[in-house]
Image (cartoon, rainbow over the protein chains, first blue to last red):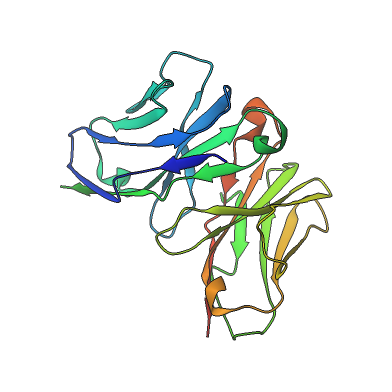
Length: 117
Length: 115
């Protein structure tokens, strides 16, 4: 079974600075997808960024980028120029590429990010 | 413009009293999911529907059931809630299975309290 580990329950960053959230995972599959979701307080979880394991290039979305290390099974999220609106719980998630694992998202426990003005 | 809507946002029920949580979507997606998120834990998939096909996770307790009467709506029924069922319940949708189709869109959740 796949597992996702987020070792940082809480992180804080000063506005306009950069922060990196860590995620490691365990799987025996060679093809899969990795995600970072953001869950603001009392609001729905939204997709921040997505990485396909067969792509070597790290995904980027504006101020958000990932460092995907397939051999190390590591998938960290870097937030540049942090804004107050980035404050949220961030979840790392894994999804298999085919078969029954194709539907299921396996989540980490989350990292609560605080942005200080 | 909420696309996945969960009602109510907060639900209080009594120990053993059946409760139903609802989810609706305006995305016309084929797949709908229910996740359980207990305090300080990762969200955990309970089951999903692909159209009318129901897919239960192996470790989902029998106490949890689901109905999907049409594309837009999906319900989570807890037949006899116990104290351990207090959690946030998240509904999600996706277009389908492969590639970009399986990006999941979430509702804001229903927080269930059991007294």
